[in-house]
Length: 91
Image (cartoon, rainbow, N blue to C red; front, top):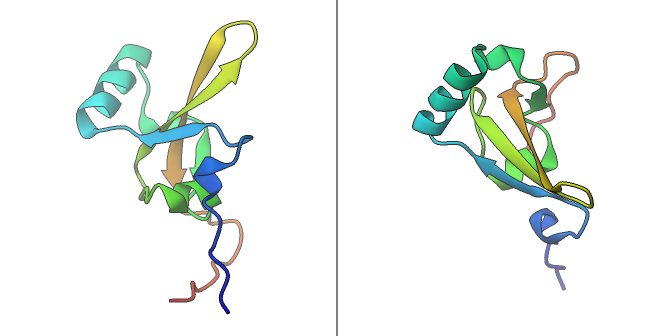
């Protein structure tokens, strides 16, 4: 009997993650006057990045609930993690 793999995106401690469209990403970078690599990075091996099917070079919007601000928005640039060897995924 195989167990169903839990959906990490449904966990109460995982904030909402969404991949920005090319247009949204360009607008964000123009507004902040930065290049993508100047954003904080998130690894392509991150479980949430895998779950939302983001690719290297994508920009992700993370929306967290905040008791003081209502919600806090952060952005991350998806990168291939070069600091450690990559694991081969099971198909």
